[in-house]
Length: 340
Ligand SMILES: [Zn+2]
Image 1 (cartoon, rainbow, N blue to C red):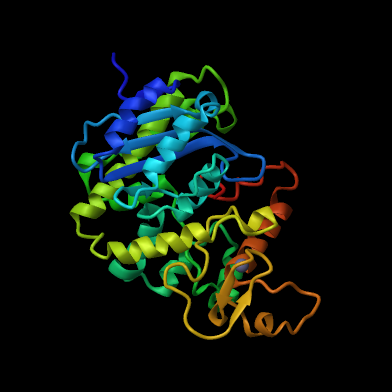
Image 2 (image 1 turned 45 degrees about the vertical axis):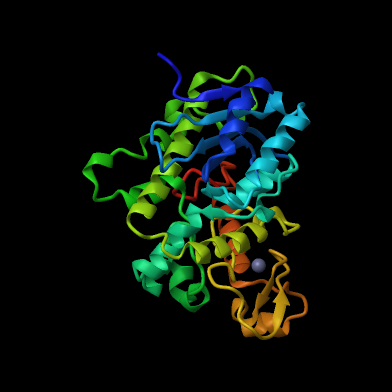
């Protein structure tokens, strides 16, 4: 059976892709690797699906960066083409992809025209579904202890949990019987024999290539549905929020404040005018709403000044540490399989 993707391992195999990028207006982008976006991590596969709206049969390009990495001129040509303001780049968790791609010299955060579907999901909940504050806080259950959320609910009013791709697909296609098992390729990766640590192996087993192709196809389907349902009507606003989302990544010195599942503050809406403060966790300069009064005024000089999100991340980490010290599994507390 013919592959339903193009596997690119040589500079020559990139030529059709570079040619196609000259006329495309939209690219879905996905990254795979080991400890992606984390210190010491590496990106090994870049998947690109071109013009997903025009032709659903288009085959994704799966780029083997372990072999292509040594061919800097070809990658420079590719990244220059992607940086174009005439190509819409559609990502899911572009914050992590942006950090991973930075290692290769491509600054997704500075690239024009990027749309993050993970962020679009949060915007949909808030602006289209009219999710209440209680429902928003409810999403944090399981990630944080029920008692903490009950007792300090006012500290979580601005905190949005970012969905995994699987959860986003389930949410969007919930009432669509024809897409009942849409998230199946992502479900229980280990059940399919996809191991996070093996993305650097070569030769890479075919099931990894199929998985990488499935991911960009699924992001494309999500984007397609948003497009068809008119949920991208405020595309400019969403793109501006995406720019803020990508720019927020990777500034923290302590890893846990970089890699987590919460939406950084002042991303959904631009920061309001007024005084600003720098968070000691994420290192973002945020408006006064992002902090408690005591954090703003630094009433306790021995404590760090943490924004609401970093405060929650710290509590989550402390809870995990206590809970999982015995078996050493730091991520088991999360219902989704991805620590981000
Ligand atoms: Zn912070």
